[in-house]
Length: 116
Image (tube, rainbow, N blue to C red):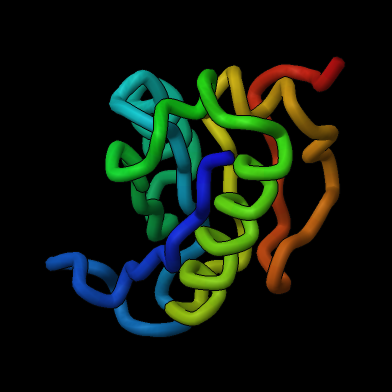
């Protein structure tokens, strides 16, 4: 079983102050950068951060329970720095759960594809 160690965003350089993040985009690697770029263009002045979680096992190789635990840890870390919304730009994690309108640690989530 893959464990989900605590996820800490506080050490990242250039992270906006608490209550300064409108949206975060999450992927295991860099594939979600196109979604990040599109959202940045469409949302203009919104504060958007990209989270690449390469320190964790590739999402496609992790169990559903490990992915859920990891998502909960990431959302808790995002909530701690004031983020209110997360787009999961990873197909593997998006397809593992129905993320539409779900919240973890008060962070509203959505995926890029449906689960199932």
